[in-house]
Length: 403
Image (tube, rainbow, N blue to C red; front, side, top):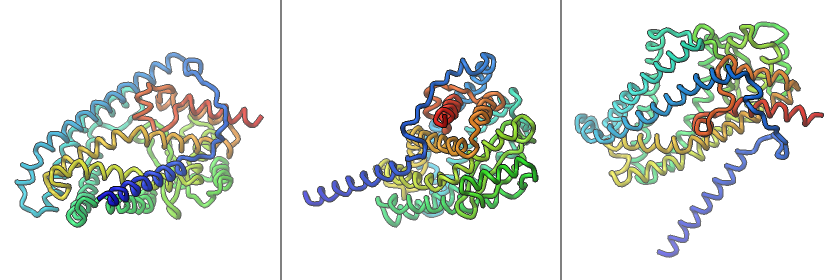
């Protein structure tokens, strides 16, 4: 018995050490460790009217997120109580019954979230950021719901089968399997997202963007323009994909005259930085590091209720998983902010234009109403990018480091 406990203890220590080493490796960035970043004060950088406007806009959305999160957790608790009754109403076998219980739970939580989505749309329309009509928005929610139901059906089918086959060790198989499935989606989805987009027009800016891609070592990365100007005035860009599917998407709102060509180049260089520094690959690594412990917590929590293999336990498992996700969100946001800062640094090195970078960050506040220095709790739980003032400070630190 003692030898068994020692062996289990040694295994846990080895796993913890391996997790820590992997986390350290994935957390490293190319930003110099001794870089002196100056303090930037939002009140000194932005007019008071801009600060008030961005604070009002972001403030309501933050509290809407809090209310939506609380309501979702409450709904999951209700379905946890109703789980046995719902399961008895379906005589479809263990796996199919569990899927139906999960589907009803998903429909319930989706319905709870709709009013908060409508509130965000109303608020965005009031501030001139959103252009969608309410009917158009409502119809656009159905594909997302269908995707949730299909995704949950597949996920629950796999989890219930694994729980029935491997018992208490199902999480050891499920974590790498789900990460592998996620990698396949990240590989395939960019091809679908490309549908309906266009290549940049042959302009001097497009030529400079291609030069920046070559400079960052990702010259074969396609750039696509997404049409979003019929839905919003906000600007955005993102990098996605793995290997041959890696590409950069720029919203067409970037090209409506509000941003200079140099500022657009900074945005593109930032996205190339994500690909150059393998942030998407690293994100998959983090998925494995976080999914395995999360599934372990779910297994431990559901064990006293008969285990995940019981259909009536599905709502409780979803509730526990939601709580775990809420707890680890600050950690995930911190990792994301480190990668976003590294992409900013990569863009600064490629463009050598800190003035244009500052211009982009300032316009995020001016046009997208991003609060430049948000409350601490919001920064921890909601912000997966550095604040605007932090990004301005990094640009100034780069400028000073080159003198």
